[in-house]
Length: 264
Image 1 (cartoon, rainbow, N blue to C red):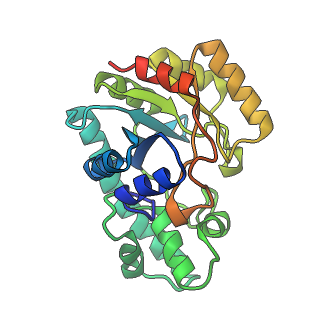
Image 2: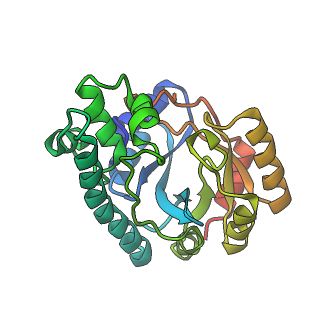
């Protein structure tokens, strides 16, 4: 319901075909796909974990904070996500205005590619560029046009990471830091900030991820061990939107049990 190309039910069917056993749905800043995903997971014999990927910031750097098992009706989390979604629309319009000076793209094309998504953003602009034939895929669109240092870039509102960690914990959820070592996307959050997030209530940290080099995986595993964080793996699957494949990086049963034990 955000930047993936499968439906929530479609993700669960694909996961079952890959013979996975526990699968989380973590759309950006929305919980609207949970019911559909949970029903399909039950039908195909999967354990479903409801989640969110919350867009936050730390010292001006982007932090994607995962929230597993938060309450779907928590007022603070819902308000936080609603503001982020609303701000993304104005931001996306301005990016499209800038990009359209050099590439054949319109706002109508972008909204057509967002379809039923509740969270509209750069991935849908990337899809419009691909459909226009000027980019080969989403990754190319981000690398060449939509990256953070691009002349077309527009910043957007996001809550502070520490505030979001506390809000997730208050809302009954288990917070985890998504792809913290993805330095190919830009600067990564320094270790001191991960320390602060742990003090605020962070529980897990992704170690095994496509965008992590061997060196980053080793660094993050050491950080997890030092701080007592649960080391996680994730595919970061987006359907046809990314090269990432379901199950290419897994969380161990022991790590999942530790994550679940931290539920409020």
